[in-house]
Image 1 (cartoon, rainbow, N blue to C red):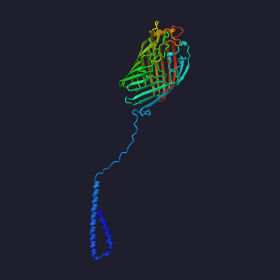
Image 2: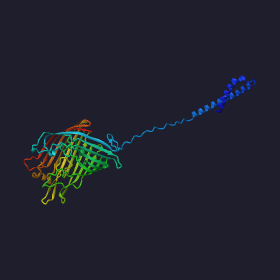
Image 3: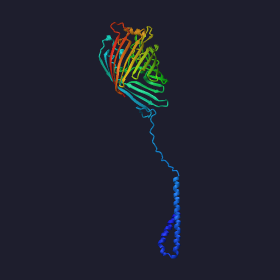
Image 4: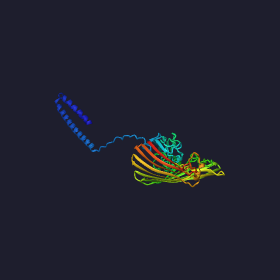
Length: 478
């Protein structure tokens, strides 16, 4: 840079010298010109050297690898983590963890009884066990409607440090009365499940909801049960296709105290109260292709009557059952169930009271337990994605050579409000369901049934009563 400045200075001096040459003497003119020529030559050499140096620097820069520093990666904001158990169709509560799903159905039912109607059987559910005897000249041709079978429910799920907590709350509007419902809420399910343990009210392991055919009737066919009890239940998987359920169930386990206290002899009450919960069990087996499901059921509970703290009587009520469902083809399924039960009417539908109570001359008490077999068979056919049909037959047969049968045959001791205790009952059901869209089901069903009481001494009273009903149903599910 110093030499360059010197060059500029020299060129400036040269220019000034050229302007002032006429003023100098001739003697010095030659010396100055020679000096200027020497400086110009030196300056030219300096410029050439500077150009060569610059070319070398450029060449060296091109030969070096180019290192490019990438720009910093943009910072991406992370979305809030979803709940660990997020499920499609469920919504999250404000705690950010509990998932809830709403479900249910809006349903209307209509029945038309061609025969066998009276004030006690104007019931939206099948009343075969209470149909008037044929000698009663009961009113015929009666229409009955209700929407109390509408139901709604909530499933919920939440992770925890002891495993996923799941549960259900479900209710309908049948209330405590079975006749058309009362329009008040009735709890169907209310339970919590953690791992293998369940606590709350839900379907008992003793009943056969998984191996019974579909019906329009809200209760179901003869030989079927859907009893929901308050229970503590343990489920033990054996392998992918087998499991065992054990439950302790509370409440009025013999269904006598609140349900059938009138079935007593000599004015003996049956309000002794149960001291122990009922024990129920179920074993499930299914094939790997899910075409076959088999179940075995068991029941054990105490029947107890008491007049005071020092005078009571206890007997065991028990039952065993087998159920099966087999899918012959994708469109055809068959069902079968069998039960043998003694001293119980809580779990299976349409049964007599669990026992009758009586007292001896000395004041001691007796329990005479009922004992019966029940059977159910059915076949279902899916005609198309929108149409399906079922035919089913079920029956109950009571033992007729025990103390219970002796009591039932003594017409003079039976309460006037009862037309005898049933010895046999059966139903035959034929139905079809049409689903014009996924959420809507329309059902039609015809039921013929009969009950036959224990033989009576009164010649003016018939032993049997026939039942004939048409059911219609419309349901929207959500």
